[in-house]
Image 1 (cartoon, helix red, strand yellow):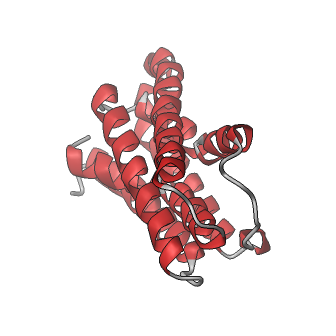
Image 2 (spheres, helix red, strand yellow):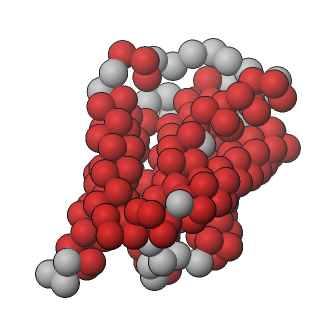
Image 3 (spheres, one colour):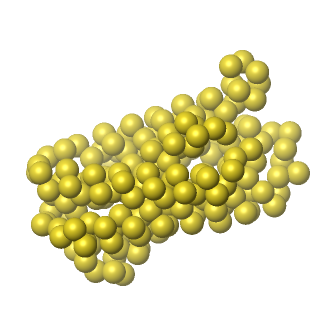
Length: 186
């Protein structure tokens, strides 16, 4: 898996964090400390989870190798479809939660990184430099979270659900690319 593919996976995975950051930014005035703390924790968990998933996926790779590309596709497509579905669900209403509460922030960091854990399992089935992937995913998530919070401060209405929708489509497209590349079609 090359840098561009990892970058777009990172971008897709970070859309949950972007939506949360955007929502928090539009709900209340955040200091730079609040924004950086939130972005750091989102990036940290988005980076740790794929590593944990990769360890699991890598440990069972020899048994799965003949169908690994299909497994990676199913995982990425499932996550992508889930993100697309969630982007239109009623649960995306803005809630006035305070991210300065560390327990809430850690809980949100874990919740938004579950998709990254599952993606990491998929990484265990295909050739990917996991350390490079972890760094890229963490940095992209950090940057996207800062941008989301700052954009949220500037406006009271940016459709955060469209960020999640787009991220889902990106993950589906990457899954299709993995299969087509493995089959020699592209």
